[in-house]
Length: 232
Image (cartoon, rainbow, N blue to C red):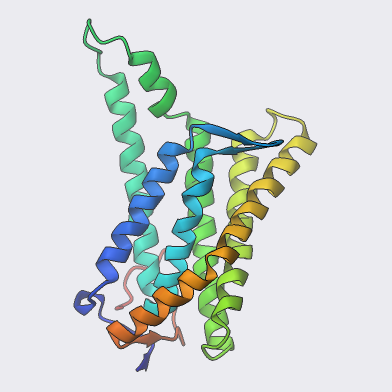
């Protein structure tokens, strides 16, 4: 059944996929504080986790549509704000006199304002770009070539995310050539990650469409990320 609206309250799996999306997002922002070196390349620990959020984003948009995806993206954004505030608040509370790990807590979970700002802006712009491109391509291609849509949307979304995050977080702290190298490294890795995950994305999307009995096409909708009044 092809529709441009879906009642997610009656969906069997939408809530669970949305929860997994937010969980992956929060895990990636926590593990991102560790730097990993693979050969001559240096990545944050989130490099292996964060791209999964784009896979979930593709699945949500492809099966349930942009309007449903928009709600989950905002849920993730609100969760990041709450998580950051809680980490900051607990860090500000006085440590027990016999607990020697305050410095370690601050080093791992203490919020660095510039990094937090970069992460928030990059996530918001990247996820909405990804969802918008996939939604538009689905209508243009009449539902064909899912692989082209997931990879194409990732090329745009991850590109926006990588450029914004690295620029806001690190501009002025390293040579410009090093900044460009960092952006290209994380961008290429994320896109390759998505390409390798394409068979799994196909499998999940096809099973969900069959189980839910829906296949949403976003015709005549508003793509304004700040519009919340649309019924989905």
